[in-house]
Image (cartoon, rainbow, N blue to C red):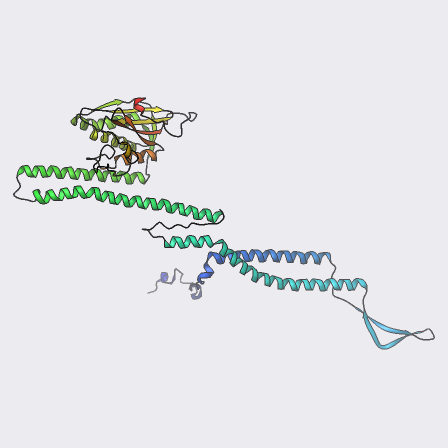
Length: 435
């Protein structure tokens, strides 16, 4: 049984010779350097041929040239009696001056044509050599880029091209690739740190669950109270792991930039966050005060912005001392809309303010305070909130509130303003709730 698709897709009527695979060219003949050399050579050879052809045509049109056409002249002699007699067997070739000039022109054109052909052959060989050399010089940075790229592995992005020389297109290409490698190196380093941090964060609750299961829940001799206590510990640990996984999923979604942009009423968003956290705040003896009013509108992903505000408020509820007041406010200033969450403690120490938005940041004492969102948080709340704000062309700022509290403010471009309104490049400083 015949299968037509076994012969490379050729039809039944295709001749066997047409189905033959073309022999592959050697590697050096398929390089960019070879193509550039051929291009340079063909260009130089073509220009030279055109110049010589032009000179030849110009001379041939301005000069009258023809082969020498001599006239045979017989010799005569004058006899003493005055008569002229032919001398048999004696004759010579003669031509007039114009005919000789035309013959000289003809010979000169023939010589020019012959030497031009030789010059073109020599020029062709020289152009190939020169083209190959020039192409090699031009592609030297590309060769360096290729070597560096081949030496770079997924686990080692420290190599750089480090191109030198004039700032031309190839130098710009090399610098661009170096910049890309810098960004990739930072991204890979961040991913490695994230994996290490997540592994560290999951190790403790997993150990707690395993210990309680092995020591109490798997023990038939354990009484009801021991089992209830172990179950509560296991539920708390699994809840912590669940919050961590949710925050990691939110981080992954934010980094994918899969947003559904729309107009977001920041006041309604803040009210929703307060409604979701009021019951938890009441159980801890914390009061939530609202200073919201309709007006400021941002443009972006409503779910992402809601999660950012909820992270700020849930951190404040978890860490604020009992009997204190948490203030949630919304407003607009200098073209920037803001959502602020202020608490009355425990505050952020000055040495930690540069790192409070890092993922899984821990305080100097090994445990986390307001800057680190612990002990019950995942350690990603502030990092996610900052990432949400920056992905919406905004900022997340921290400022002191009262004698020992903190205010975290999300600043976003206010979309309720018309285009004629000037907006500062950066949001104003300070605590907007105290202004």
